[in-house]
Length: 451
Image (cartoon, rainbow, N blue to C red; front, side):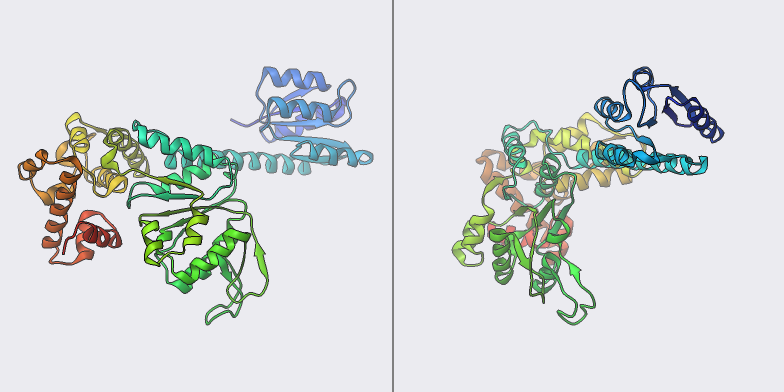
């Protein structure tokens, strides 16, 4: 079905020419002889585009445009103007007109303007749809846990300011998802969200990634490169695993946080940017400060709004809704028919301590969807790798007599030792079996005194 175009002009000859030209291309046309009639037509129907003459008796085109913008802010409006009123057309563009045509115009020119305006509107709607999908993908606002709700409430308040936010918590708890949600809730949501993994690159590459470099700054720098801080200007930069940043880079980042300016690698001119910084780590930064591996002044600069994201084992009431979210997403992304979790499968999920946190839950659901051919996931479809490494429930029966945290620690030690045995002592392979990052597994080994 072709779009409906509203044409408002007090000249019958112009109305007739526009109607004929649009109809020859299959567009439906709605005519109005003056401003009030155009607004009346807008109330009765929902045109996809409007042509409005700037000089009409009773209600001129600028006033019609203003009222259209108030009632239908996304409606593409093309202003028509004579040669002597181009200044009025400029005024109309400032009021939000999509484009303008100067009379007299030929039909081919008019059709090009129509197609361009409709294409822009299609792109706007597509961007809006994608944004809503992204918001839904990263919105962590749905929670049944009081402790997690407090984290989200604080994060929503912080989102309205430009304050630096520091997210703390174990690997896999969803710090990156919360950082994206913070950006989506903030006034900066129309600009870029740029993540930077501070542990994935060498010190030299990370410096170039963050701050950019000038041509010839080092071997291989054949052209100038903008850093992530510059690319994200106006938006948000997410510094993940900030606790692993090397001391030299910490000093340069501190200078940026203090002055909101930096030098590109090999550069001599300070670059100023307006960017929101969100940082995250699974390290104990206060302990790192005491150990001398993290700068105290940088810690205090980052620690403006500090939030600790609880591990999934401390909010098991969130498992059902998170599992349903991941299940719907996986089915959609893999273009599979909708699936459901049986009551027994859900009970299995909620009875598991999730050492890999939210990331492990998402991977578990994804694996089940990939391998399942039916519409209902049963307990046997939900492979809990760490639980399978431990064995059946009888093996862990005694730990029910221990205090909760001690019981969890024993459970984690047994899981990790079994994984190390199965992997022949390889920490990398053990981490893969457990669905963990090798760096996080190393910290767990130290934390749980596992040799």
